[in-house]
Length: 283
Ligand SMILES: [Zn+2]
Image (cartoon, rainbow, N blue to C red; front, side, top):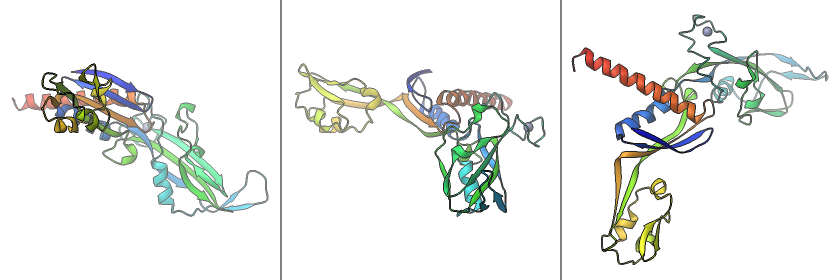
């Protein structure tokens, strides 16, 4: 198997995977969606009662919002939390025996009074490295009215997508077959209908022959419109079952590169375990 990076940035990646099969790329897709660990807020403690204004103004605020606490907790759960998989481990398997420690938990606090909109960026780190500060700062959480306030403490822990969508590290994960196109120039009568039919304008008539444009292979979605309109049957478009264009995004908790490396590691462990299980039963 060979992997070529077609494009990548901090949060997305497009790959060309050669010499494989649909089962493997689908396994990679499912691992990216459900198996990669990431941090997410799992516990929120709301402070009840009146809130004194530390600004010194003679104003009183009530600790209440237009939304139920459960909805706010759910919204906070979906905020991407920067994750370092070298540093954090699952709380259940931690040396603290599930009590909570800097190796398995990240704590944030929030203090806000209305009228205002509370955003994800209002979550402040408590005693942790600045690299874990919330990066997506403009996710709206709740609107506070006059005399309303929100004071809370939130704890993030490591989890994976099989448990809850808030721990899903990769999104929009998909793949498609690599297209191959054969144009029989002897049969082609240069009518140009295929050029007109292609919805993505991927064919041109150049120097008295039909050719594909640059980037054809990554942009053709195998709609077969060109083949269907070609009366002399000079065009054949096929899906290559051993080569795939694979793409995914992350929510920013992990970079796309970190997510891919982690997915490959997990795939290796799973296939290794499967191989051992097969050996055990003598297969
Ligand atoms: Zn711990």
